[in-house]
Length: 404
Ligand code: FAD
Image (cartoon, rainbow, N blue to C red; front, top):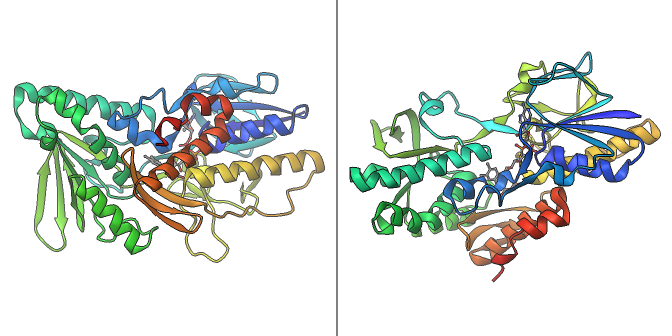
């Protein structure tokens, strides 16, 4: 019997486990390790940060999808992968895990690009705990305003106007009336600002579509400072340079960091040949130095056949990698050989939500705008929920209430 150790129960890791459980009932034992007892939909974190979706709505217990006959789930922190000895060390267990195949799906962390004070003075938004910390802080600031009357308490700055920053701004707009009620002010007094270095936002979309998205966010009352390079962050203060102008600064009660992410730093720490936590994997999604280690999701870099830059890391490609990895492990266990075909990927499209009922993006070659885009976004979210959690999680956590 082969031992498969899967590290990380995000989109990539959990879907691999779900598929292997179905495909190889008698031939393997799986050990799944994850820091938390739950899986969360990372693509919805901005909604939990704003308070428009509860943490329980965007997550579910891992035990719901585990078949205990095949899989042992261990809630613990992975601290070391020894690729020569084929072992994994966990923080809370003396005994090492041994594997025949290891699947690394340890996901992403916030990237601060060395900007002074970003780590200390801005909130990252890369997991449920961080999203809840943002929400709690916003609410505390709204309460503070009642006695302080300091307008900064009502001001939220988003550092980074990429896909995540724009989606977060949209969710904050939806939540604005509830913040205003707590602070005892009218909603227009709640100020939301995005500070972004580039002047061409969201380059994954056509200029026309990106402009639509930017104008949509602005029309909802969000202030956008584009072409503004953040130079440092101090408590309650963001400094930036607009073009060649002198440094300027802006103060706010809440500062959120969404400028970018990198792969898990454990990849470098464990000696993998990684850049910003990502390993350029083989055609079979394995580590070039260790054919028994699959590296998938946000810790992997996959080069398109004709491209110069790896595919962007997304939940969509993480799920596609899980499909391939499960097939390839089945093939190796049954035939001793890799799948004949290498991993290939075709994006189904990308849609950004702007609050609950607006959005923009492209899917299956069509550009979508407004309400239609927001419906498509929910269909995509439901599909990915179905792929990891199955029908039970789809029925209890899916976005059916919103198709109207
Ligand atoms: P993750 O989802 O990060 O899962 C990794 C898992 O590993 C986590 O459960 C984590 O707790 C666990 N883990 C990490 N380190 C350890 C450790 N040392 N020990 C034990 N466990 C550990 N993508 C899209 O395709 N479409 C979108 O619309 C989209 N929107 C997004 C919106 C936001 C706000 C964000 C933040 C991301 C969005 N993404 C989107 C990107 C997408 O969420 C990621 O690409 C995806 O989550 C990567 O999946 P993964 O399985 O590699 O990692």
